[in-house]
Image (cartoon, rainbow, N blue to C red; front, side, top):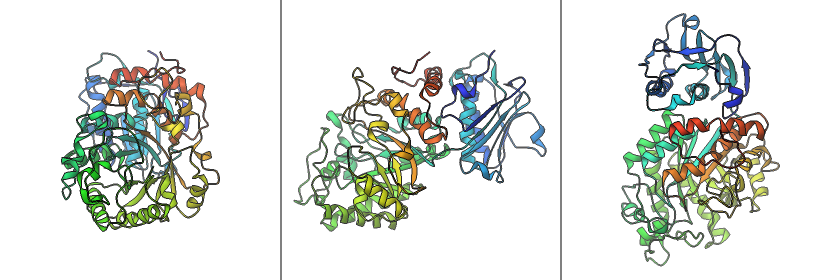
Length: 497
């Protein structure tokens, strides 16, 4: 049978592909899967994908001396492979062996995602499939363009339980994304347990858009999400939005309000009406308590403080607040991430600002901040917001930033978004998914797929954008999504099989 051509199917597009000669490699019940040290965990994850569909009882074996000339699938962490960087990999497939080499375990993991896409889509089935499992001869060298390739999931407007988040992690990992930004609080709900502030979930966790049931993550839930993501080389970045988007907190604790009166729960979708009382010391004690517990639960280096759409404070109040919160974040050993409005404050070098509003006038401020060491993550709403409608006929989603077709999500250059940004200041891209209109994981998947892989390629691939080539490779993902049960939308313009 014909083997899968990487150049025609793999997303994101690899940096360099050289078709090989000779027969394909065939996985059988006798295939050896070898790895040692840091490579072993990656090999176990890959074996876990292969076992259900192939029916083969594949075990990860330690790499033996002289194994480079042996057969089977070999995963190797090679500290000398400096040219591959922190996340690159080299994949060589011949009839005798599959050799996957990287300088880090993360690079190996991304290599296994490419290898997975080179196998028939039914390799992702949870049931045995009786067919040959072949990979065509090829040589791939692949390194990412940007170190930050993120997806944001809003669990505040509507809550999605931990099992749904794990499912989303699996989906984004396939496309080499390495950041999961969780929007954990907003006007409509508070979604993370904080022991020192139990009313946040007892009251703030019970509401949702439209009067839904609410919900929240226990600390064990959050730990499970963080560890599951880390095993797939994804960093979880928790967001507690402030000083605006805070009605759930204001309903939970009266002393966060200037008048000392708790607010009523909110289930609408308007923005800009709420704010912490930034002149009260009790507010900063509250933030210290929340960020202290959240930092202790979060091994990654970042805490996202939101900072967007604040309409009730003066510019001075806002800037003073962000600068003080920045000190609290640093006190707990983390780096501040904020939406683009936070650039109005004096941010420390290394802080991260997330650009989103293409209708704002922050480009000059962002350029100047980048010259001072502030880093940028790009989420232009008219390109990356996965909650925007695909077109007029799509039922889910909003449209304030316009309609975002798959071609539009793909056809932009992150390097050109902020003119004059300092060299190296752009960390990468992120695809936010707000949940005002989404109530199920199927809704989430319909909005994210097929647009999320388009944004993943924008963040990973160093080659220029070619829509015609991309849409063919994207269409080739559909049989895999069918097997995985991903509720993707067959958006127009792709040419689905």
